[in-house]
Amino acid sequence: MPTIGSPALGVSGVPRAVAFWTAALDRVPSGGPVGEDWTVLVPAGGGSGVELALGLSESPVREEPRVHLGLFAGDAADQLAEVERLVALGAERVDWKRYPEDPDFVVLADTGGDRFWVIDTSRS
Image 1 (cartoon, helix red, strand yellow):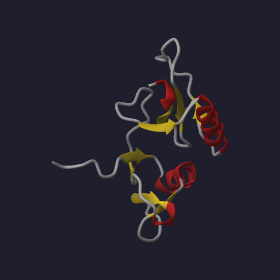
Image 2 (cartoon, rainbow, N blue to C red):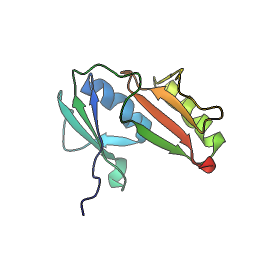
Image 3 (spheres, rainbow, N blue to C red):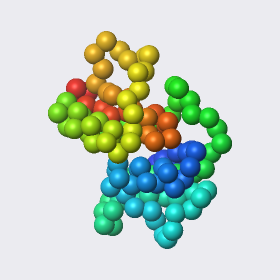
């Protein structure tokens, strides 16, 4: 049975996305200089964890993406701190029209407009 290896995000600019996601997730580019078309980010310091592939895409950003990254926070305080940290790195809050009445997640957009969620896992 195969396992999930590396989620891949289509991005409008690989170097721009690398700058945001390396800081957001404590990752580094794997294997040399950042490419214009494709780069894989791996845990910094040789640690273990999920890789993230970033590939150049000409597709427009979708307001309601079919696939998105979910970043886990331990509780509401961690979630708030992460949202503030990510916004300081250039992410923006998204006024998402599909929020439930009492959401356990916050929708953000990275510096290229791609949506991702920061989830309070203490509520799941």
